[in-house]
Length: 402
Image 1 (cartoon, rainbow, N blue to C red):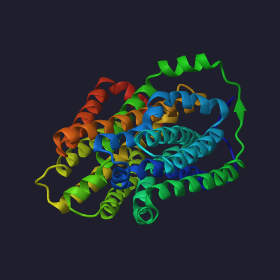
Image 2 (image 1 turned 180 degrees about the vertical axis):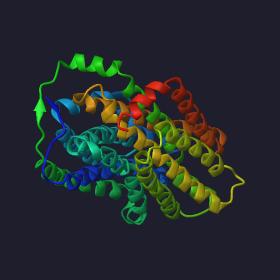
Image 3 (image 1 turned 135 degrees about the horizontal axis):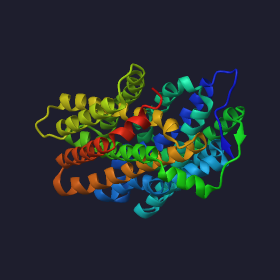
């Protein structure tokens, strides 16, 4: 069965906020490793390239199975998929609590990655169903804040980490995820969604794979995520070393910088509403990210300017996912395949999350922190090469809701 947009006399926003909350809590699981990097390294005796896999392992499953998860969400229903994702996240975080070494912790992170994928594919699909068409861009702009808000909240929780240790913090997250699963099921179950008959799954797979929109959105999201997490995946460690501050202070500074991305998400939605073209916003966002990365990882950059550039990097980066996510419902081959299209986008996001930190950990170990800027520039250039080659298709898919 497939899902169509619901109609209701009640405001959808309370339910949408609960759905966004699930994404925020899932994003906290992404950010808890960068924040706890020093403690994990010391406790388990790991080097930087190995620790980078703890960040990237989260994305292994999503990099390979995003579209499959999207089809599963279309089949079993996005609400069930989100609930299953939250449960798996809780299990993975609980597993991490008892990890005795790098291998077991990587496995736990992969389990968490499965749950994260389920939530972030299902949640925007639910939002698209519950939101009136004329509010789609606004709702997706709010949804796009889930990652920066989650990363910010978990980094602001550094004092709790210091109190509980990283293992206790993993256990706390497992409990929060379990509790939120109950809340999510209670709130979202009251929303009735009409269903219609789906075609055989092989037909749906072929139709989605032949469409240009999902490929374009997924590819651009991969370039964005690789650049974003190349910087923010290691920012607490970099700031601690570069500014000679404590790990807790570095986490707080990183949290402030990441929080600015939420403002970028909202700004992206407003700029789209004011008529700015998708390609204009993408070129501007990617360009500013590259310029800021060069300044952040330049040894001659003053400390205060580094903080400013981190905020600007985050602000510009926040515009990009809004442009891409708001276009997903309009880029699906047909409404019944919105979940599959979201799966494409999340597969791109996870490929970027896998590539960015992995290459960064290796490059920094070989060439030092300036290598991060080189990688960001490369990722941005990949995006730039991709946009003009498919400019007409990109314009049609991203401007469909103008």
